[in-house]
Amino acid sequence: MEGMRRILNLSYMYLPVHLRACCLRLGMHPEDYEIMRDDLVRQWIAEGLVRRLPGLDLEDVARSYFNELINRSLIQPERTVAGDVISSKVHDVIRDVIISKCQEENFMSVVYNSEDMARLHECKPKVRRLFFCSSSNDATNGTISRATGLSKVRSIVSFGGSKYLNSLLFSKYLRVLLTENWGITVDLSDINRLFHLRYLKVTAGNIKLPSELKGLVHLETLELTSDSIPSDVVQLPRLSHLTALCHRLPEGIGNLKLLRTLNGFQLTGCSSEDIKGLGELTNLRELFFVIEDTTEIDDALVSSIEKLRKLRHLRFSHNWYLDNDSLSSLSNPPLLIETLRMKGIITFRIPRWIGDLHCLHHLELYVRQTSTDDIGLLGELPSLMEFKLCLLHFAANGAIIVRTGLFPALEYFQTYFQDEDHELHSAQDDVMAHLCFEVGSMPKLQRLELHLWEGHWGGATPVGIEHLLALQQIKLGFAYCGKVDRRAESAFRDALQAHPNRHSIRFN
Image 1 (cartoon, rainbow, N blue to C red):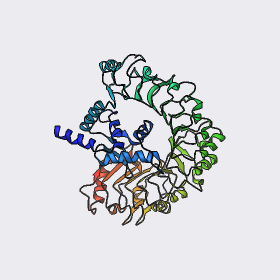
Image 2 (cartoon, rainbow, N blue to C red; image 1 turned 135 degrees about the vertical axis):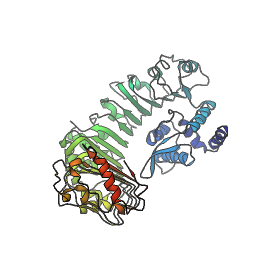
Image 3 (cartoon, rainbow, N blue to C red; image 1 turned 90 degrees about the horizontal axis):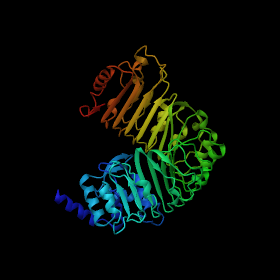
Image 4 (cartoon, one colour; image 1 turned 120 degrees about the horizontal axis):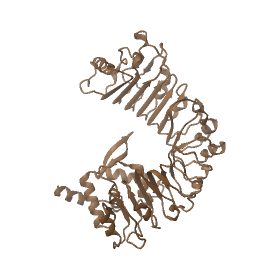
C-alpha cells in the first residue's frame, strides 16, 4: 500500500500545473461518491481553476481536463454515454492521497466532527475551501463568529448537512456553495450578500429563499430543489445554467441571453410571450420541460425550438401518456441535437425531421403506430447509439423489419408494446413475431430490451435475432406476468441456438 501511495504522489507531482488544483478539488466529495462531470467542471470554472484558451469554449476546456485526469487513471469512469464519460469515482487510496495533499498545501479543510470545526475557528493560514464530511447533526451543530479563520472561505461543500452552513454564509469571498441532504432546511434568506458567488446548488427538503436575487450578479449556475424561484432570476446577467424542481417558467426568460441549460420547468400558465422568449435563448445547449397538459406543446413552442441552433439536448417528460403531435410539425430542427427524449409525449408516427439529426446519439419516442419505412428513416442515422421506442398500437398485419445495414452505431435498443386493446387470437397476433432483424442489421447492438403485456405474447421470438452478432444481454419484461418470464427465456435461448455467442448472452 505504501508503494502505491508513493506512485500516486509521483503521479500528482508530474501533473501539469493547471491540472493539480482540479485534481485536489476531487477531494471535496464523499468516499465512493459518483461525481457528475458537468457538475464538477462548473465548480472548477466557478473557482477560476480553468484557463481560458483562444477560440475555445471554457466548458469544453474543463471537460478536456476531466478526460485527462481519466487518462492518467486518477479518476475512474463510472457512466459512459455514447463513448462520452459523464460521471466518475475516485478510488479510496487515491482519495486518501488527494486529501493528504490538500492538507499539505492548505488547499482544503475537512470537517469530520465538532473538534475539527473548533480548530478551524482561529486557523492560520486562512481556510479557502471547507468540506463537511459528516452527516451527523451533533458533529456539525453550532454557530461561528465572523472573526475567524473561515472569513475568506471561497468554497463550501456539504453532502451530509451541516448546521454551521447558515452561519458560514457571511463570507463575501464565497464562490461555490453546494449542499446535498433532503432531510434538512437550508436558509438562503441572506444569499444576496454573496457578491462573488458563481455556483449555487442546493438539494434539500426545504429551502428558504429571499424575495430577490439581484445581489448575485456573478452567479453562473443555479440549481435548487425548490418549487419557487424569485422572479428577478431573469435579471442575473451571467446566469448560464438554471435548474429547478417542476417550477413554472419565469416571466421574461428571454432576458437570459447567456443561458446554456434550462431544466425541470413547467409550461403551465406561461404566456405566449414567454414561450416566444425561449427562442431568444440562442446560446441554449440543454432544454428539459415537464409537461402537464396537451396544450403546452403548441406552434409557438415549436417555433421557438427551431431558433435554438446550438441545442444539443432536448427532453420532454409526462407522468403517463399524452397525445400531442405538434412536434411532428418541426420543419427546421436544430441539427446539432445529440439527445432527444419525449417521455410520455405521444406522436401519431415517427416525426420525419428526426431523420435529419445526424449528430443524434440518444432517442426516446412514444408513437401510436410505426412501420418498416419509419424505422428505416431512423436506421440511417450514423451516430445513434441508444434507441427507446414505445409503440401504443400494433396492427395485426403490420411488421417492423430492421433492414440490412441499418443502425450502424446502435448499442442499446429498448422497445415497449403497450397496446392494451391488442388481442392474441393466433400466432399471427403475437407482436414478437412481427419484429424482424435482417442479416447485417444493428451490427454493434449489445443490449436488447423487449417489454409487452403478458397477453400479447404467444411464445414467439423476433425473427432473425441470431443476426445480432454483437449481442451480449437480453432483458425481457412482461406486465402483470406470472411465470411467463421463464418460458420466454427458454424460447429466446432456443431462438439463439444459431448465434455464435449464444453461451455468453445474459438474460435479465
